[in-house]
Amino acid sequence: MEYLPEFDLLRPNTVDEALSLRRERPDARFLAGGTDLIVNIRRGIAEPGTVIDLTGIAEIRRIARQDDGGLKIGAAVTLAELLERPELTDEYQALREAAAEVAASSHREVATVGGNLCLDTRCLYYNQSEWWRSANAYCLKHRGEVCHVAPSGKHCFAAFSGDLAPAIMALGGTAEIAGPDGRRTAPLGEIYQDDGAAHLRLADGEMISAVQLPAAGTWQSGYAKARVRAAIDFPLAGTAIALRTDGRALEDIRVALTGTNSCPILIAGTDRLLGEAVGEEMAEQLVAMLPKQIQPMSSTFTPPGYRRKVVANLARSLFQRLIEAP
Ligand SMILES: Cc1cc2nc3c(=O)[nH]c(=O)nc-3n(C[C@H](O)[C@H](O)[C@H](O)COP(=O)(O)OP(=O)(O)OC[C@H]3O[C@@H](n4cnc5c(N)ncnc54)[C@H](O)[C@@H]3O)c2cc1C
Image (tube, rainbow, N blue to C red; front, side, top):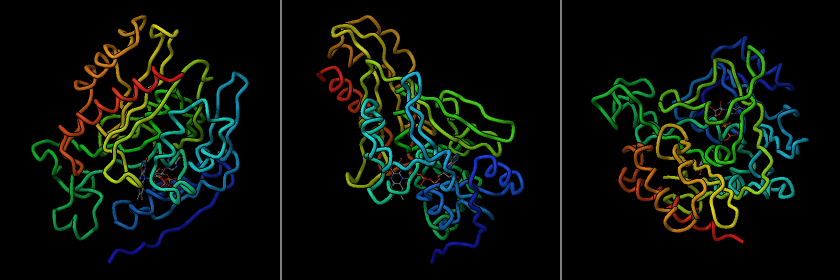
Protein backbone atom coordinates (compact mmCIF):
# COMPACT_ATOMS: atom_id res chain seq x y z
CA MET A 1 0.00 0.00 0.00
CA GLU A 2 1.26 3.52 -0.78
CA TYR A 3 1.34 5.99 2.08
CA LEU A 4 2.44 9.59 2.44
CA PRO A 5 5.87 9.67 4.08
CA GLU A 6 6.81 12.15 6.79
CA PHE A 7 8.17 15.56 5.77
CA ASP A 8 8.43 19.00 7.33
CA LEU A 9 5.92 21.54 6.00
CA LEU A 10 7.04 25.20 6.04
CA ARG A 11 4.73 28.10 5.22
CA PRO A 12 6.56 31.32 4.35
CA ASN A 13 4.70 34.64 3.89
CA THR A 14 7.06 36.26 1.40
CA VAL A 15 9.12 35.19 -1.60
CA ASP A 16 12.35 36.19 0.20
CA GLU A 17 11.41 34.04 3.16
CA ALA A 18 10.68 31.09 0.85
CA LEU A 19 14.06 31.50 -0.83
CA SER A 20 15.91 31.68 2.45
CA LEU A 21 14.14 28.55 3.78
CA ARG A 22 15.09 26.79 0.57
CA ARG A 23 18.74 27.86 1.04
CA GLU A 24 18.73 26.42 4.57
CA ARG A 25 17.24 23.12 3.41
CA PRO A 26 18.75 22.03 0.08
CA ASP A 27 16.57 18.88 -0.08
CA ALA A 28 13.35 20.93 0.16
CA ARG A 29 10.81 21.18 -2.67
CA PHE A 30 8.44 24.06 -3.36
CA LEU A 31 4.78 23.09 -3.03
CA ALA A 32 1.81 24.91 -4.54
CA GLY A 33 -1.51 23.10 -5.11
CA GLY A 34 0.22 19.76 -4.62
CA THR A 35 -1.80 18.03 -7.35
CA ASP A 36 1.43 16.84 -8.98
CA LEU A 37 4.00 16.88 -6.17
CA ILE A 38 1.95 15.15 -3.47
CA VAL A 39 0.99 12.37 -5.90
CA ASN A 40 4.68 11.90 -6.71
CA ILE A 41 5.70 11.90 -3.04
CA ARG A 42 3.10 9.24 -2.33
CA ARG A 43 4.49 7.15 -5.18
CA GLY A 44 8.05 7.49 -3.95
CA ILE A 45 9.27 9.33 -7.07
CA ALA A 46 9.80 12.55 -5.09
CA GLU A 47 11.34 12.23 -1.62
CA PRO A 48 11.76 15.68 -0.06
CA GLY A 49 12.50 15.97 3.65
CA THR A 50 10.85 19.40 3.60
CA VAL A 51 8.19 21.03 1.46
CA ILE A 52 7.86 24.81 1.28
CA ASP A 53 4.24 25.79 0.70
CA LEU A 54 4.06 28.88 -1.54
CA THR A 55 0.32 29.40 -1.36
CA GLY A 56 0.43 31.76 1.64
CA ILE A 57 2.59 34.31 -0.19
CA ALA A 58 0.21 37.18 -1.02
CA GLU A 59 2.59 38.82 -3.53
CA ILE A 60 2.40 35.80 -5.89
CA ARG A 61 -1.36 35.28 -5.58
CA ARG A 62 -2.39 38.35 -7.63
CA ILE A 63 -3.47 38.91 -11.23
CA ALA A 64 -2.93 42.50 -12.34
CA ARG A 65 -3.14 44.57 -15.52
CA GLN A 66 0.20 46.27 -16.29
CA ASP A 67 0.76 49.88 -17.38
CA ASP A 68 1.65 48.71 -20.91
CA GLY A 69 -1.67 46.84 -21.20
CA GLY A 70 -0.10 43.45 -20.48
CA LEU A 71 -0.99 41.09 -17.66
CA LYS A 72 1.00 39.81 -14.70
CA ILE A 73 -0.17 36.54 -13.15
CA GLY A 74 1.35 35.45 -9.84
CA ALA A 75 2.71 31.91 -9.76
CA ALA A 76 0.40 30.88 -6.90
CA VAL A 77 -2.77 32.03 -8.68
CA THR A 78 -4.98 28.96 -9.10
CA LEU A 79 -6.38 27.91 -12.43
CA ALA A 80 -9.91 28.44 -11.06
CA GLU A 81 -9.00 32.03 -10.06
CA LEU A 82 -7.59 32.63 -13.55
CA LEU A 83 -10.84 31.43 -15.11
CA GLU A 84 -12.91 33.56 -12.71
CA ARG A 85 -11.33 36.78 -14.04
CA PRO A 86 -12.65 37.03 -17.64
CA GLU A 87 -12.36 40.84 -17.55
CA LEU A 88 -8.57 40.38 -17.40
CA THR A 89 -8.05 37.10 -19.23
CA ASP A 90 -10.67 37.03 -22.04
CA GLU A 91 -8.28 38.49 -24.57
CA TYR A 92 -5.82 35.63 -23.91
CA GLN A 93 -8.08 32.85 -25.16
CA ALA A 94 -5.25 30.31 -25.54
CA LEU A 95 -4.54 30.63 -21.83
CA ARG A 96 -8.20 30.40 -20.82
CA GLU A 97 -8.84 27.38 -23.05
CA ALA A 98 -5.70 25.61 -21.77
CA ALA A 99 -6.50 26.34 -18.10
CA ALA A 100 -10.09 25.13 -18.51
CA GLU A 101 -8.81 21.77 -19.77
CA VAL A 102 -6.31 21.02 -17.02
CA ALA A 103 -7.34 17.94 -15.02
CA ALA A 104 -10.83 18.32 -13.46
CA SER A 105 -12.60 21.22 -11.73
CA SER A 106 -11.64 20.01 -8.24
CA HIS A 107 -7.94 20.01 -9.23
CA ARG A 108 -8.25 23.49 -10.76
CA GLU A 109 -9.49 24.90 -7.43
CA VAL A 110 -6.00 24.34 -5.96
CA ALA A 111 -3.70 23.76 -8.96
CA THR A 112 -1.57 26.82 -9.66
CA VAL A 113 0.01 28.49 -12.67
CA GLY A 114 3.55 27.99 -11.28
CA GLY A 115 2.91 24.35 -10.45
CA ASN A 116 1.57 23.74 -13.93
CA LEU A 117 4.63 25.29 -15.57
CA CYS A 118 6.97 23.26 -13.33
CA LEU A 119 5.01 20.02 -13.63
CA ASP A 120 7.27 16.97 -13.64
CA THR A 121 7.65 15.07 -16.92
CA ARG A 122 5.59 11.89 -17.28
CA CYS A 123 6.14 8.37 -18.59
CA LEU A 124 4.44 4.97 -18.54
CA TYR A 125 7.46 3.58 -16.72
CA TYR A 126 7.75 6.43 -14.19
CA ASN A 127 4.23 7.36 -13.02
CA GLN A 128 3.71 3.97 -11.40
CA SER A 129 3.60 2.62 -7.88
CA GLU A 130 6.79 1.76 -5.99
CA TRP A 131 6.17 -2.00 -6.32
CA TRP A 132 5.54 -1.70 -10.08
CA ARG A 133 8.72 0.27 -10.62
CA SER A 134 10.86 -1.95 -8.38
CA ALA A 135 9.60 -5.03 -10.25
CA ASN A 136 10.86 -3.38 -13.46
CA ALA A 137 14.27 -2.35 -12.01
CA TYR A 138 13.08 1.30 -11.89
CA CYS A 139 13.98 3.59 -14.83
CA LEU A 140 16.61 6.10 -15.88
CA LYS A 141 14.60 9.05 -14.54
CA HIS A 142 14.51 7.68 -11.00
CA ARG A 143 16.76 5.11 -9.32
CA GLY A 144 17.26 2.94 -12.43
CA GLU A 145 19.96 2.44 -15.08
CA VAL A 146 17.82 1.94 -18.19
CA CYS A 147 15.27 4.02 -20.07
CA HIS A 148 12.60 1.42 -20.91
CA VAL A 149 11.36 3.63 -23.75
CA ALA A 150 14.78 3.71 -25.48
CA PRO A 151 16.91 1.06 -23.69
CA SER A 152 20.02 1.44 -25.87
CA GLY A 153 20.66 5.08 -24.91
CA LYS A 154 21.20 7.14 -21.80
CA HIS A 155 18.56 9.79 -22.46
CA CYS A 156 15.22 10.05 -20.64
CA PHE A 157 12.21 10.55 -22.92
CA ALA A 158 9.52 11.26 -20.30
CA ALA A 159 7.08 13.72 -21.86
CA PHE A 160 6.19 17.23 -20.71
CA SER A 161 2.39 17.28 -20.39
CA GLY A 162 1.53 20.70 -19.00
CA ASP A 163 -1.26 22.56 -20.78
CA LEU A 164 -0.43 26.16 -19.85
CA ALA A 165 3.16 26.38 -21.10
CA PRO A 166 2.41 26.19 -24.85
CA ALA A 167 -0.40 28.75 -24.44
CA ILE A 168 1.87 31.19 -22.61
CA MET A 169 4.70 30.64 -25.12
CA ALA A 170 2.34 31.28 -28.06
CA LEU A 171 1.17 34.45 -26.32
CA GLY A 172 4.79 35.65 -26.04
CA GLY A 173 4.88 35.29 -22.24
CA THR A 174 7.88 35.61 -19.97
CA ALA A 175 8.58 34.04 -16.59
CA GLU A 176 9.63 36.08 -13.57
CA ILE A 177 12.12 34.01 -11.64
CA ALA A 178 13.29 34.59 -8.07
CA GLY A 179 16.37 32.87 -6.71
CA PRO A 180 19.42 33.08 -4.48
CA ASP A 181 21.10 35.47 -6.97
CA GLY A 182 18.13 37.85 -7.20
CA ARG A 183 15.27 38.25 -9.65
CA ARG A 184 15.34 37.79 -13.42
CA THR A 185 12.93 37.38 -16.32
CA ALA A 186 13.18 35.02 -19.27
CA PRO A 187 10.98 34.10 -22.23
CA LEU A 188 9.04 31.14 -20.86
CA GLY A 189 10.49 28.69 -23.40
CA GLU A 190 13.98 29.36 -22.04
CA ILE A 191 13.23 27.71 -18.71
CA TYR A 192 12.89 24.32 -20.43
CA GLN A 193 15.18 21.83 -22.15
CA ASP A 194 14.39 18.59 -23.99
CA ASP A 195 15.57 16.16 -21.31
CA GLY A 196 12.93 14.15 -19.48
CA ALA A 197 15.15 13.71 -16.42
CA ALA A 198 16.00 17.43 -16.11
CA HIS A 199 13.52 19.41 -18.17
CA LEU A 200 13.66 22.64 -16.09
CA ARG A 201 16.54 25.05 -16.56
CA LEU A 202 15.95 26.79 -13.22
CA ALA A 203 19.08 27.10 -11.08
CA ASP A 204 19.16 25.38 -7.70
CA GLY A 205 16.84 27.24 -5.31
CA GLU A 206 15.09 29.28 -8.01
CA MET A 207 11.31 29.52 -8.21
CA ILE A 208 8.86 31.11 -10.64
CA SER A 209 7.21 34.11 -8.99
CA ALA A 210 4.98 35.27 -11.87
CA VAL A 211 4.24 35.13 -15.57
CA GLN A 212 3.95 38.27 -17.71
CA LEU A 213 1.92 38.45 -20.91
CA PRO A 214 2.33 41.33 -23.38
CA ALA A 215 -0.73 43.37 -24.34
CA ALA A 216 -2.97 41.20 -26.51
CA GLY A 217 -3.64 43.94 -29.09
CA THR A 218 -5.02 42.37 -32.24
CA TRP A 219 -3.58 38.91 -31.55
CA GLN A 220 -6.10 36.07 -31.60
CA SER A 221 -5.28 32.82 -29.92
CA GLY A 222 -6.57 29.40 -28.97
CA TYR A 223 -5.60 26.04 -27.55
CA ALA A 224 -6.58 22.56 -28.70
CA LYS A 225 -5.89 19.37 -26.80
CA ALA A 226 -6.34 15.64 -27.35
CA ARG A 227 -6.61 13.29 -24.39
CA VAL A 228 -7.78 9.77 -23.75
CA ARG A 229 -10.53 10.67 -21.24
CA ALA A 230 -12.30 13.88 -22.20
CA ALA A 231 -13.35 14.77 -18.63
CA ILE A 232 -9.96 14.51 -16.95
CA ASP A 233 -6.59 13.76 -18.49
CA PHE A 234 -3.15 15.00 -19.39
CA PRO A 235 -2.71 15.94 -23.05
CA LEU A 236 -1.53 13.25 -25.44
CA ALA A 237 -0.73 16.36 -27.42
CA GLY A 238 -1.74 20.00 -27.17
CA THR A 239 -1.35 22.89 -29.61
CA ALA A 240 -1.51 26.61 -28.93
CA ILE A 241 -1.57 29.19 -31.71
CA ALA A 242 -1.52 32.97 -31.51
CA LEU A 243 -1.74 34.96 -34.74
CA ARG A 244 -2.44 38.35 -36.26
CA THR A 245 -3.84 39.00 -39.73
CA ASP A 246 -4.91 42.09 -41.67
CA GLY A 247 -8.01 40.19 -42.72
CA ARG A 248 -6.25 38.63 -45.72
CA ALA A 249 -2.53 38.11 -45.05
CA LEU A 250 -0.71 36.75 -42.03
CA GLU A 251 1.06 39.46 -40.03
CA ASP A 252 2.50 37.30 -37.25
CA ILE A 253 2.13 33.84 -35.75
CA ARG A 254 3.47 31.73 -32.88
CA VAL A 255 2.75 28.02 -32.55
CA ALA A 256 3.68 25.95 -29.48
CA LEU A 257 3.13 22.30 -28.62
CA THR A 258 2.99 20.11 -25.53
CA GLY A 259 2.98 16.36 -25.00
CA THR A 260 5.33 15.55 -27.88
CA ASN A 261 8.73 16.08 -26.23
CA SER A 262 10.25 16.43 -22.77
CA CYS A 263 9.58 20.18 -22.92
CA PRO A 264 7.06 22.45 -24.64
CA ILE A 265 8.18 23.34 -28.17
CA LEU A 266 7.88 26.70 -29.93
CA ILE A 267 7.72 25.85 -33.64
CA ALA A 268 10.53 27.44 -35.66
CA GLY A 269 10.28 28.66 -39.25
CA THR A 270 6.79 30.13 -39.11
CA ASP A 271 8.14 33.52 -40.27
CA ARG A 272 8.21 32.01 -43.79
CA LEU A 273 4.42 32.31 -43.75
CA LEU A 274 4.30 36.03 -42.98
CA GLY A 275 2.71 38.22 -45.63
CA GLU A 276 1.07 35.22 -47.34
CA ALA A 277 -2.69 34.84 -47.70
CA VAL A 278 -4.24 32.90 -44.84
CA GLY A 279 -6.25 29.83 -45.78
CA GLU A 280 -6.17 26.06 -46.20
CA GLU A 281 -2.89 26.09 -48.10
CA MET A 282 -1.19 27.94 -45.26
CA ALA A 283 -2.62 25.44 -42.76
CA GLU A 284 -0.91 22.64 -44.71
CA GLN A 285 2.37 24.57 -44.86
CA LEU A 286 2.20 24.99 -41.10
CA VAL A 287 1.43 21.32 -40.50
CA ALA A 288 4.37 20.36 -42.74
CA MET A 289 6.75 22.17 -40.35
CA LEU A 290 5.84 20.01 -37.36
CA PRO A 291 7.25 16.49 -37.97
CA LYS A 292 10.94 17.44 -37.93
CA GLN A 293 10.55 19.50 -34.75
CA ILE A 294 8.82 16.94 -32.52
CA GLN A 295 9.86 13.60 -31.09
CA PRO A 296 7.00 11.68 -29.48
CA MET A 297 8.21 8.40 -28.00
CA SER A 298 6.49 5.35 -26.47
CA SER A 299 6.08 7.10 -23.13
CA THR A 300 2.25 7.00 -23.19
CA PHE A 301 -0.43 4.42 -23.97
CA THR A 302 -0.69 5.65 -27.55
CA PRO A 303 2.05 5.00 -30.13
CA PRO A 304 4.29 7.87 -31.28
CA GLY A 305 2.91 7.77 -34.83
CA TYR A 306 -0.59 8.35 -33.49
CA ARG A 307 0.52 11.41 -31.53
CA ARG A 308 2.23 12.78 -34.65
CA LYS A 309 -1.11 12.55 -36.51
CA VAL A 310 -2.99 14.03 -33.56
CA VAL A 311 -0.71 17.04 -33.29
CA ALA A 312 -1.01 17.69 -37.03
CA ASN A 313 -4.80 17.53 -36.86
CA LEU A 314 -4.93 19.78 -33.80
CA ALA A 315 -2.73 22.39 -35.48
CA ARG A 316 -4.72 22.28 -38.72
CA SER A 317 -8.14 22.60 -37.09
CA LEU A 318 -7.05 25.24 -34.57
CA PHE A 319 -5.46 27.35 -37.32
CA GLN A 320 -8.71 27.11 -39.34
CA ARG A 321 -10.78 28.03 -36.28
CA LEU A 322 -8.68 31.15 -35.65
CA ILE A 323 -8.66 32.43 -39.21
CA GLU A 324 -12.40 31.87 -39.54
CA ALA A 325 -13.15 33.62 -36.22
CA PRO A 326 -15.08 36.89 -36.62
C1 LIG B 1 -5.77 13.12 -12.20
C2 LIG B 1 -4.87 14.25 -12.64
C3 LIG B 1 -5.06 14.79 -13.90
C4 LIG B 1 -4.23 15.84 -14.31
N1 LIG B 1 -4.45 16.38 -15.56
C5 LIG B 1 -3.66 17.40 -15.97
C6 LIG B 1 -3.89 17.99 -17.25
O1 LIG B 1 -4.83 17.64 -17.98
N2 LIG B 1 -3.05 18.98 -17.66
C7 LIG B 1 -2.04 19.44 -16.86
O2 LIG B 1 -1.33 20.37 -17.28
N3 LIG B 1 -1.81 18.92 -15.65
C8 LIG B 1 -2.61 17.92 -15.17
N4 LIG B 1 -2.40 17.38 -13.93
C9 LIG B 1 -1.27 17.83 -13.14
C10 LIG B 1 -1.54 18.97 -12.19
O3 LIG B 1 -2.81 18.86 -11.59
C11 LIG B 1 -1.45 20.35 -12.85
O4 LIG B 1 -0.37 20.42 -13.74
C12 LIG B 1 -1.38 21.48 -11.85
O5 LIG B 1 -1.50 22.74 -12.49
C13 LIG B 1 -0.08 21.49 -11.05
O6 LIG B 1 -0.09 22.62 -10.21
P1 LIG B 1 0.08 22.49 -8.63
O7 LIG B 1 -0.01 23.85 -8.08
O8 LIG B 1 -0.85 21.48 -8.05
O9 LIG B 1 1.58 21.95 -8.58
P2 LIG B 1 2.36 21.22 -7.40
O10 LIG B 1 1.99 19.78 -7.39
O11 LIG B 1 2.26 21.96 -6.13
O12 LIG B 1 3.84 21.40 -7.97
C14 LIG B 1 4.24 20.79 -9.19
C15 LIG B 1 5.75 20.98 -9.36
O13 LIG B 1 6.04 22.35 -9.52
C16 LIG B 1 6.94 22.82 -8.51
N5 LIG B 1 6.49 24.18 -8.22
C17 LIG B 1 5.27 24.57 -7.81
N6 LIG B 1 5.19 25.91 -7.81
C18 LIG B 1 6.40 26.37 -8.19
C19 LIG B 1 6.95 27.68 -8.40
N7 LIG B 1 6.24 28.78 -8.19
N8 LIG B 1 8.24 27.78 -8.81
C20 LIG B 1 8.98 26.66 -9.03
N9 LIG B 1 8.52 25.41 -8.87
C21 LIG B 1 7.23 25.27 -8.46
C22 LIG B 1 6.81 21.82 -7.36
O14 LIG B 1 8.00 21.75 -6.61
C23 LIG B 1 6.55 20.54 -8.13
O15 LIG B 1 7.75 19.99 -8.60
C24 LIG B 1 -3.22 16.34 -13.46
C25 LIG B 1 -3.05 15.78 -12.19
C26 LIG B 1 -3.87 14.76 -11.79
C27 LIG B 1 -3.67 14.18 -10.41
